[in-house]
Figure (cartoon, rainbow, N blue to C red):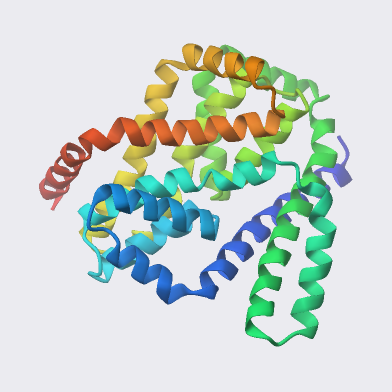
Length: 315
């Protein structure tokens, strides 16, 4: 593969990451006070907090942003550790929205989003129009970056080294899971890595059996953002970041143990309801986070107690 192709992939990845970050910041700027008040006040029950966490993450397009915001609220004593549990679980469900956006193949609209967004940003000073323009521009960067990556990712599949790596991942799904965790931790965006996996699966470069553990690993790798945001915070905020990590580790372990049955379940689902490969992985990502939430929800009080006791011992 030539240098230009690698450069194009990296430019596409950079645009995609910028698009996600810009879109997230633009949406937060629309009503940052309302978002904080919503997070701080609507936590009277864990179930309500799950819904709020899911809703806000769907709006701002980033579970990392929701979790980081939650950590900052705990550090400011506007929320307790126990109140944050539901929001973190809900954020994990809400983060799947990006995978669904990718799954619906909206790449052809990238140039329209970019042009309309850029012109409105340049020629309009109206706050609402400018806010909408920022969202459109962010979406345009996201889609165009992904399209640029997609144009050149196919060439990677012809590399013998890539085929060896795929064979290794097929024979050892745990390595695929670790690959997802490491690459996501390095880039600090599970959405970007999952989008690449969706495209590779769409190109038939990797199998569904490899895609599933890789996506599971991405959910562990994304917790690095919460850890980084909690480095200089109080113990309550650190406990919230640790719960975020524990949530994804428990879910990933459960799915890895039953990987083969889940794989056959998804194959059966696809047989009866044929959907695009990208959308298929989006549904799998959503299924993972919903099932993990249902799995942990009955025991969340015990997990809180366990985390509390662990931090007391280390104090």
